[in-house]
Amino acid sequence: MMHAAVEVVEPALKAVGNIISQNYEDMVEAMMQLQVIPSLLWLVDYPNLKIRREALRSLSNIATGNHSQIQAVIDAGVVPRIMPFMRYWASENREEKSLYEETSIILGNIVSNGSNDQKRYLLSEHVFEAFCDPLRNPKLLKGSGMFNEPTLRVLLGRMFNLLRFAKSDFSDSKEIIASLFKKEKVLDTLIAINTSMNSSMNVVAWSKQILDFVKELNFE
Image 1: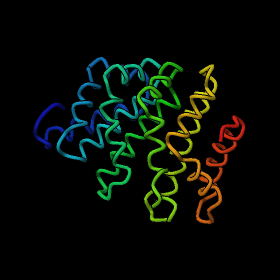
Image 2 (image 1 turned 90 degrees about the horizontal axis):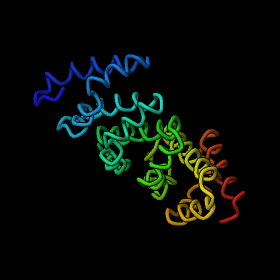
Image 3 (image 1 turned 135 degrees about the vertical axis):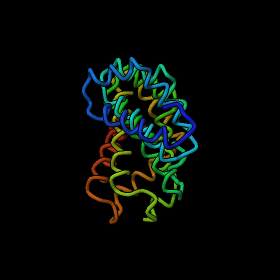
């Protein structure tokens, strides 16, 4: 797959993606033995945005696997390499926006399926702050279409899961979570989402869970 010509890379990447997307552990392990993760990571910086998106999608499928497979993704340096794509949440370019979405899915899969150490690693890489970043944008509250409802719902769900982990993992979790919320200044946005007539029930449900979580910790 590590080739300069798109016409060579595209079919090879599609074949790899089809195998990995089956989510059979032994098939994913076989692909990992063939050093597929470094190849996919190389394609993350490919000039063709479609290739980059498909490489991210395959990495996302690996990140749905067991702790060993997720650790291989982490050890390859995937997280710091893809974090810049989280800045594309506001891009008006459809392909760039898709890079944000695929990157968010990779990080979300690690949040959902990773071990405590792996989730702790995400916090150290400022993934929570990256999830918060779009919520500081006023366009989100004006119904500008900056986020569609499924994307916003998933974003809030990932934030809640990381917060819940931080609460259970750290003895000083209250101070850590309070620091994150105060630094990111997202409480006002969550309150606005929770009370907006334009918010769907699913989005309101997630924002309410986060707000209840904050209230329980009593650090507003």
